[in-house]
Image (cartoon, rainbow, N blue to C red; front, top):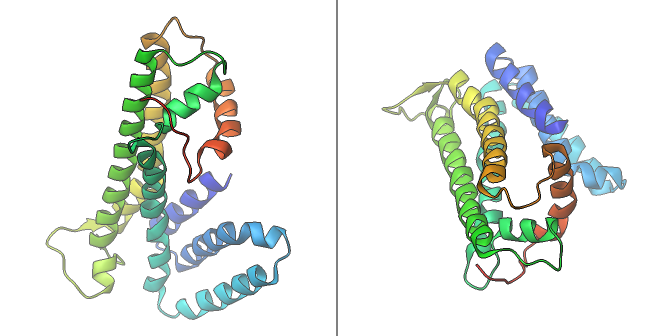
Length: 225
């Protein structure tokens, strides 16, 4: 739900030019980051949340400053995911999509060479796509007016976009692009490899979510590419 709630709240704040909603978006973001500690009753997490609320109250005196934390997720999250995919492309490592494919099929049945090649190329594609989304979000955050990063720094950019344009791309279109690409690739894969067994989209998503924790780790398993 947070994946939908956060960008929706930020986009609503942008459309209404509402400092209150912008502060709520920042508080939601901070709460999500601190959530593991809050759930465990960690004192540091609750103190950090209290200090964040105080900081937001102080920032409310300069509403433009409330937008700065909201520029981070559309830049940092895709870049982080691009790194997760991209680091598995190094020599001696198994591309992330190959790892998923191996886990989701019979453990005693190795990936056919054409499937392994496709999985590697798909890993590269996801890396590039996520990195592009991150870069676009960063550029728009820099040149947005008003309240963009350069605007707040007193720097006039030769290229400018409306703040609502930044939000439309960063908080709406980016998610649509990822969702559409995921669904189209899922459908294409069924046509590209009809001899392979294929789950429904819902079943595939459940399996992928279950497999993700053991794969998205700093130590990728080596394998053939």
